[in-house]
Length: 224
Length: 262
Image (spheres, rainbow over the protein chains, first blue to last red):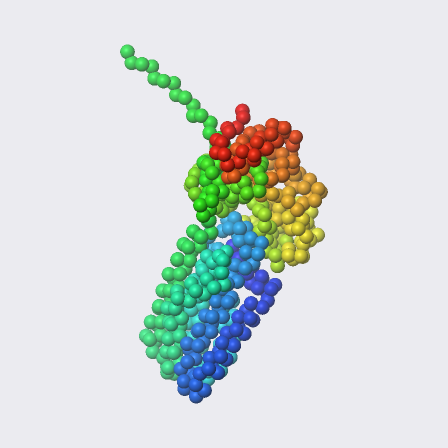
């Protein structure tokens, strides 16, 4: 646990030392929101209907930009080899990298959610607890799958294209569940828990599958 | 009358006996290109084996296989005589130097070494890092980002990371690259100390002189094959120089591996 924490803290320190990734991704996500608003029907009702889907699509697109840089510092002068030579379990190393990715994505979501919801005229405070649960599961799933794919494509030619091409179809169930869950939250002042829990269960299952697959795949991929 | 039972013969000593790490008939193929072919090599505690050969001979691949970073396509890697969990057991005991520094450029040498000391489970990672930086005489650069340091200073920091915590196995790929004469002399001194303390050293280089100051045994690789293995009498070993020239000239003709001399 101490070693796992050391890797996460190190990633946070690197982000702090070279700031800009979180800010750039948040700005991209907000610009995507502006594009959605300008391109859609300006009436409040259609805009509100579009909001949940647009919110999660913007997070996914912006997150994809950030995921491509997950192993950038490790690749620069091969610090990854030093990490792999440390007596740290490969699964712990993968989960630590996924955890720091999830923290970056959460930071982006915290910055963009109030602005995005205001642009689409959606009541953020009313849905906040449910949205936080959806965001936690969606972010974990995106980080787990994204970290695995970012590692697999880190040394590939054309990795900038390869990562989204692989990520987007695989992450679709998570995106759909997050958008539908948010729609359930917004549909009524007291959303039916059963409706929401179905989406939460689907997302939790996605996370478990990609946590297991990620640990297994990473362990095999690190040994050439 | 029953024949007298044959006396029990003691097992023939294998080249891997007593070795900290041993490669047995290891081959490695990358996309149909053989980087290593049927290489057997062992390094014992308290000894240094110099792996010599021209660029592209397979030295770096051999070190990566020995470190457990690359899985051999054929053959096996033994750690203290056992193949079981060899890669995981190696991770706890290896100091590794590669062509890259294996450091985070935005971090300082102190931050880098403290991180890796912490990951290695050191009780006082900061102190261990400071001690390692002092040993390589780079403590005055300890708090500047690695990315702004000179090539030679980065190499010293990379060596400090590898030697930190006195690992029992040192796998060094061109460790003298980028060092000035004072740095090279200091490194030789530290490696001699490590060997005398019982560390096993596998040192890959295409320059012979500094390596042979330290090595007890030399192995010559050419085109992925082990062409020669034998003891070293010193930096001016004429036999070895001759073997090197012959091995590199003959590379690729399929000549079998020569067994070590007595």
